[in-house]
Length: 319
Image (cartoon, rainbow, N blue to C red; front, top):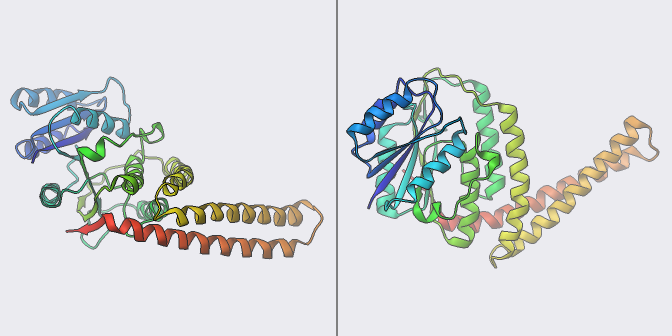
């Protein structure tokens, strides 16, 4: 069984040599995508290329973002004969034992997708700002809504494994060319598992932080994820309608959207009466808003429960 490794690199001069030398003998192919680094990353990669025949380098002429760079790495992976690919970053944050463990798990159970979860008692080494904990908790809540699987965590984790079967069915939208692409991948593979019987696993990994500063805009990520979850919710209805086990869930989703619309309309009427002097009983509209909101949550939760039971068959937590 053969494995490829994709390494994303942007200004990784201090770490990229160590990362490649650590893994080069453990993978059949190592694909490094240099996203127009401004330091000596490219020079280091060119020197390593002379030494290792199984190292291939993709040099982006301009900075395309992590999501697009990852997609370019996948395109290169599809050209070789390897059955699985693991993606890491060139900053050496991921623990080597976790990367090798993914190889071991896939070799034994042949999962199509293994995502990782760093938010457990020993998952984070070093300090990260509390705002990032909050942001990831919010993203974890959204991925549960998006996938209908309430055991999925940490959707922004950058360590994951794919089978070639899964990669052939994946297409990254421009919305996630820069930030948030692991969230899309987790959601999309979950959707694909409905029709293609893909096996999905979640593994608890460890990440070491070294006082690096993130260039990711929390506001951009927030609105991007909200937009995606809503559009994915609509698209997922059509997917579930084609599956007899999920047709009731799809009908409940449609009903929940109607209730949500009525809830928004009701609270809009309440505020227009209260603050803009439109005529009408504002208290009645607030009560109507509460009724529709409660019904919306009940219907949505029941739909999610049905979906979770079906998807549970293809999802496993491994260690």
